[in-house]
Image (tube, rainbow over all chains, first blue to last red; front, top):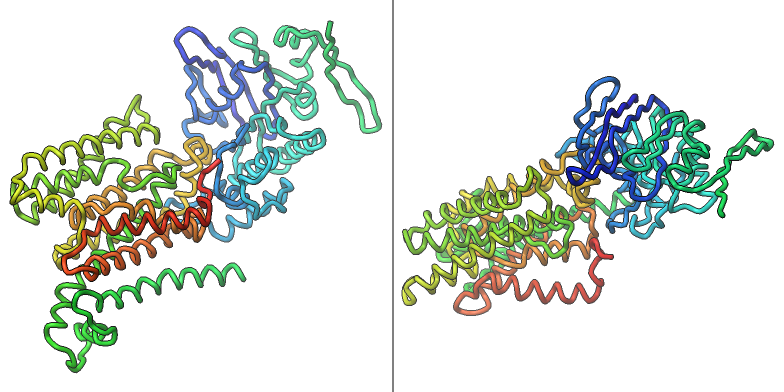
Length: 255
Length: 341
């Protein structure tokens, strides 16, 4: 799915803009990351795309059409601390909601698809566990399976790696890569780790307040100069070659 | 397979128990009639059965008890399923179907008609219309910036409820203390003693219709219970869905107040008791609430008409006994885990 966001702005009051004139374009199977300091509006931006909040100005175009309804996006929120009294499977099954008539309930096909998606995400073992007994990372994976079960064209994830341990962070990033290719869906995710952006995303949006927004190829946007501007932090971006190829690391230089 | 078997057993129980209680209730009252005879009397209405009973027994069962039991069954099921749906929708276990002020509104409509017209069918109409009016008022207050949140809805329900409760007090104050006041007070406490086939006919179709709507919405109520953002993110419209639940509940509550006064605690305690038994999945909770609500109301009405020579007000009984059962279950299951942290 091709998604374009043009001149997006958001503010709670008339003067103080959280972000202004943001442009973003996502092509099919693209992985786009959003990076920026706390409080610069990453989650707000995501919520606006989802229609949970409204942009003050700007428009969203999907496959070159102006878009009104958000039923085609999957969403994995940052924290799901609400106590839901359902099993992980029930929770994931709800992703099928928009395919199921208001007065009916999920059928065999819906169950099968949900089952497949839970397998894909690697949480089929958690199937019968109550959602509120799961850890933060496991909950996010259940919600990822739910989003995939909804057959969305764009999957939006809010800090998918923040609640995970070191190994699971990369497991999730690899899953993101796989999903984007296999399901041909586009993925937009926020993160605090520049290295994660470098690891999976082709494009990156750097959000640094009203006047500092950069969008483009990840390798160009994540530069020592831009990170300095946005975080006020000196960094060195280094390349490390190993048997699997070349990886990039961002090393902060503290005085 | 094991799961499927368990499911069908549960459903069989949910259907069979109300039927058994229905037949048992026919024989219960100040004038006790054995089960086999009361069944014969009932079936003699449809089939040709040789008369082995006295005429007075037939009058008691067909003219007095049957309409009462039918009303109790419908209203018990309706109030209980309304409570279960609202608790899921508002994501709050303390919610009852009366939360939006509908029952206070209908109650006021009833008592004002009792004073002004002294005509029982006008009492019914007035109570029903004021029930619907109160949801419109609640809707008006909760609507801010073209958006309605569950919180604003609950708060405006509190306003509407308090408003009509005060008006009821005012009516009681101006009512004739010898003539009118006792009948108002008794009516408000709830009773099926005024049951008739007219009332059954009036409410049966809308009641069954609304219960069916809530029954069909049971999986959607699961989704609603996740909260507004999740509903939207799943591509559904939370507002439409909410009103699809609110409207049938409003009709059910208005109808039940219109025919039987204010019967409290059924819509709060019964869904809870069901939650503790079958869990929080509304796909099973909703049918369970329908069945248990109907059974509970029939049993309470049996008690109301058989315990003492004078009838005990039904609302008092449902509350008293509901609270006791609720209290014991709460202690045993530690709350059943609905949205608790």
